[in-house]
Image 1 (cartoon, helix red, strand yellow):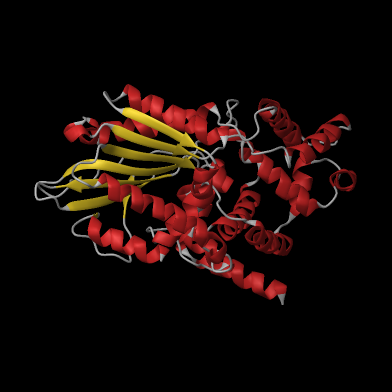
Image 2 (tube, rainbow, N blue to C red):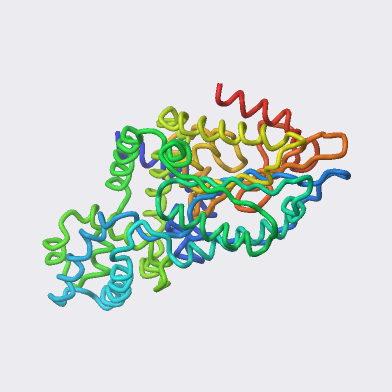
Length: 420
C-alpha cells in the first residue's frame, strides 16, 4: 500500500508544470537543489507606479537572515570521519576524491562558525537595504518628522549580524535617521519560532523517511563515490541515511567563503530526488501544510499582529515612524506568508502535493523578505503595496484598488480576520 501511495505521489509531481520547472532549475544550476539553503538571487524588475497623488511614507519589513553556515555539526560530525576514513583506505572513486577535497575545505571553514552568517549573507543584506533606500527614497527624507526606524531581531547571532549589515548599509545611503535596536525573548517569540515545533518535525521526519525509502536509489550514489560497494557499505552503514546526510551537508558549500557548490558533484537525477524529499519535508515541518498548519498558526498570528499594531501607529498623521525592520528566520516568515495567502505560497497543501505547488529554493531562500510599502494622498487615503523578495506580489483572496495596490483599511481588516 505504501508503494502505491508514493507511486501516486511521484506521478502527481511529474505531471505538474512546477515539477518540470524545479527539475530544469536544478539541471541549470545545482545550487537550486539546496531547498531553503539556496542563496538569495536578486533579479531587477520594474515596479508599478503608485496611483496619481500617492506618495510612499512608511515601510514595514520582515527579513530572513542572510546566507549562513549549517546551524550545527549534527550531520558534518557524522560524515566527516566516514569520508576521511574512506580516503585513507583508498575507497574513493575519482569523483569521490574530487568531492572530498572541496568537502574538506568547507568543513574546515565551518569549524567554530556553525549557525553564523557568511560573508555572502552579509552582502545579501547590504544589497537589499541599499535598493530599498534607493527605490523608496521619499520615505526616508525626514518629511513631517518621520525619522525614526524601529529594528527588532531574533536573539540568534546570524539575525543580529544581518540586522547590523542591513542597517549599516541603509545608513550609508540615507541621512538624518534615528535607529532603535531591540532583541530578547519577548521578540524571539514571534520573530523566530514562538512555538514548540517538535510534533510538526516528528510528522515531517516520518513522511520524509517513508518517501526516501520508497523512491531513493542510494546504491547509485555509493557506486558513484566509492570503488568498492561492499567495503563502502561496511563503512557508511545505512545507505539511505548516508545519502540524506551527504546531501544535507553539501547544501551549504555555495554559501561559504570557499564558494564551491558541493551539490555540483552529484548526478542530476540524485539531486532532483533529494530536493523532492527535502522540499516536501520542509513545508510540512514549518509551512502551513495540511498536516501541520495548526502547529504554526500561533507564531503566524503573533507576527501578523505585530505588523498590524506597528502599522496602526505609523499611519497616524503625527507619527514619526518611517519604517519597521524585523530580522528573523524562514520558520516564522514561511507560515505567515501561507497564512496571509501571498501569491505562490500555498495554504494547507498535503505532503503528497507540496512539490507541485511550492519551491523552497525560490520562495524561502536565504535573506527572503516581505515589505509592505505604505502610500498616502493629500486627502489622507492610505494604500499598501506588497513586495516579496523585492518583487511586487498580491493576495489572491483580496481585490486590489489598482495594480498591486490595496486600501489599507481593507487589508487591515483582512489581516485582523486571520488572527481572531
